[in-house]
Image 1 (cartoon, one colour):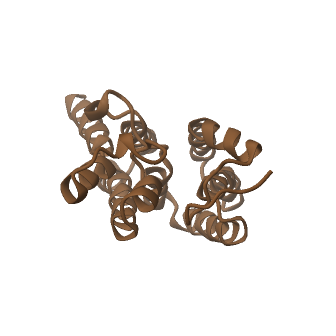
Image 2 (image 1 turned 90 degrees about the vertical axis):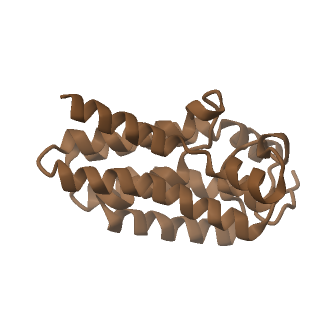
Image 3 (image 1 turned 135 degrees about the vertical axis):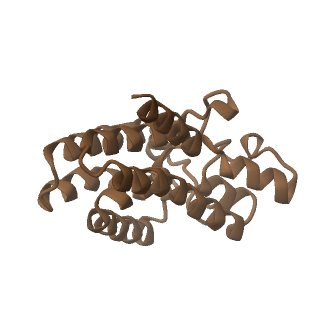
Length: 201
């Protein structure tokens, strides 16, 4: 039992590593929380600090979601509930990081990494949806919300276990809730597009 508890704690701490904050501090000596949207995620780093550093943040946030779930699938192959638990605490670690007073990112990249270890094909489908929506509308937030909504649907169509589908639905809901401010800006016509421009009402 103690091994499970330790693994869950380590998974949370892995997810809680604020790569966006660290990268902005190390490379530009700024607190990413004080510029742009104030979010520690890859989009704010990309838009406010540096495009290459934003991509680096994205990659690292995906990896920190992927590794704990991939490893638990290896060490506990017969315990699906353990895989779900690790994926959950890793994503929660990112969104509510203990290293930044429980204020983290919106969970999209880390959730992508976690589900990439669970069902790569479903993530590929969601990624294609994300790219298409982003290419058409130019809003990362809107594309992220659409991809989140696609996740449980994709898993269900692909025949994933019911508990995985339900779990993905809860994570999708979390991602949408974390985008409430973006949704308000989209409706008000003040949301930034990927290249920094705003829409008009």
